[in-house]
Length: 453
Image: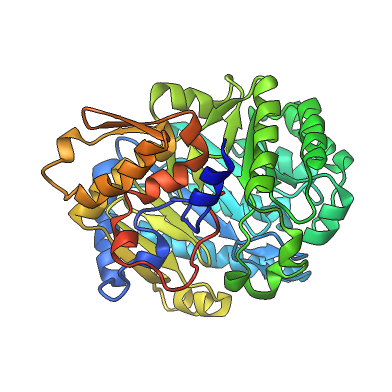
């Protein structure tokens, strides 16, 4: 891959877990009432047939990892667990009270923060409380994010007993210098222990998260991390690009200097080497930054066309409606997005007032829905067909952007069908940006997104 292409396309760009992206939401015309109507419409259309997804944000962490871009609160006070669970259950009740039939839950994901900050008993209380007023869909998938340092065998067994079959462990990198820089110190022994426990208990999809582009990271570190990972054979891997966004996250990403972070060619080489090793070890590349064995549900979803992408990332369980519970959580009705209050105390106050705690969002226009569909197609299956939408949207600005990608052989275009080339996989975020009419119409005057490469 030529250096000139990397330099040309390494620009700030979204990861497209939504369209429009959060900075381009029309929050001025958004209202909680409009969101509730959007929720009701989507629920009526999809609950009985495909069910709904729940994303539950558990924001507490005992220590701050300086690579993290998630919304969290650092505390060692575990008495915060019970009030937070009560608030989550009340928020869920507020949604359930809006509809006449029981929600059919197809997917639950516990994200953070650190979900395993909570005791197994409290997590059991939460899940049983959610399911008490719902029906579990036949083909359901429950998953959670576990920290290798504090995930106990009891955590794994308790959640397994509640129907969880997928767990994701954050590894990042095994090098001690890198771990010190990002304040995430965990040994290979810690990761091996929880991974083997999960296999022994019966989890069918174990995932490891690895990051490239971390401060002080070299090719030999990526090789070592993937060699160690290979020995544990997780079913799925997320091989993420480190998003260096200190202007958004403040001091949380200032535990090292900018010059310590690999850039451009150097960073891309880390990814290419990691990808090569993963492919050599029978992992299949899926969408952007994900790899899986052919036995994993994500690969099967790719094959049968059901793979989906939303605020939880790639998912093998597509649902039209996703409800986010907890501080900062984002909900998606397909027709609209809504984000919860980020401040915990204000979130508690709104829940206490029997108010669904959304504070900003966006109701999608007809054009938004069409563009969203094509971006999702590109992110999930690396191709899309514009034919049926040619008269519904002005594609001229998009065609102008695509011409440069065609010239660089990052895409192929035949009869209005677009396909990402092998060479173009590294630039899928840039390809999606060509479709981002809101970004084109209102170029930001400051950096809103991490670099695409």
